[in-house]
Image (tube, rainbow, N blue to C red; front, side, top):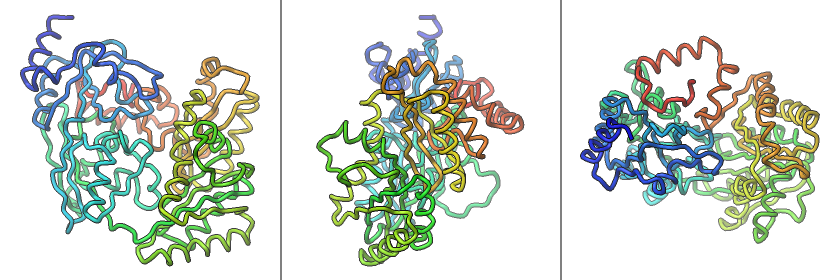
Length: 474
């Protein structure tokens, strides 16, 4: 270890305590390993501050010694945004000890929480107060609010409530200089110049470290009804979405597209889970949820109107309506367990894309045709938040080819998928971010002007490139 590194770590121990400066390789390993286990970085150390002032102290030390910082929350990301490279020169700054709920203001319908609070904890605190924090992700038991904001996470309720950005009123940020910007304004209207909040949300820790946030809360619906619908063709999903939006408007709180292969994988991995249908023989499926602030009868009335029109127009073949909360949870498990089922079946090549909803059908047809022409027998594991145009479009190896051999074609598969996404005016990252995994691809899909403006912002705030270097911008 270099002498200046020893000096730096000694200063870190003085700032936050010996127990919270982790140097041993065995103790660093969980922080250095990408959550799917497909990549392992190497850090100089893991730093675990307890509060915003300690974060600021550590950032100032990193600037002084020019030590790169990789901010990390629950480390549930999928684009290598929260793990270091393999040089061993960066520190991981874990925010999980910043886990206090600073304020819950029922009258203002806001909650002020530190970045290390787990999403599930925030949901529960809101529920205990008779309110709703609607951000919902499969990883909500382990992902943190800071990470949600840093990646502008979406989830299943974006259709009704918006991404993380729309759910946040204000943030507290430690800047690359180690200053603390107190932007914790619980205001829904604040038109006083540049919106710095939005600069840091979605920046993946490359411009500063979000340490606290003011989150919006909402009234809890009086009733939520969940329906699993079987469709005669994948193209019927957008027709069903139009019908559901026309009848339910803002009461439509989720609309998830699921391919038959997704359900088959879940059934294989979780054989004890009761299936919504006797056999997964339909062309496509949708899981939709209607939330009513009036009554269960009102929600049921809306859904039945959707069923009647959808059946009449031929865009729904069958449907299962949950009659209890337990049944609704079981139906949702068929959506939420898809990622785990994919992992148990062997890793695949993942894409987190967004498209204009009007282009989704044409994209899926064109992309499947192109992939099967290039890689006969490859399997498309497609699911996602159709209500906001976000597809998780994953490509699995043919049954007669090992996934490790199939991964050798990842660059070509990415080119096919992302090229068609661009052709249909979509985005190569809907909610996962860019991180290190997609940073080299970004110049192909962002204009030179956009990239130049982004680099100018990065240079202005972080001229020494200390904040999460190598992420987003190469």
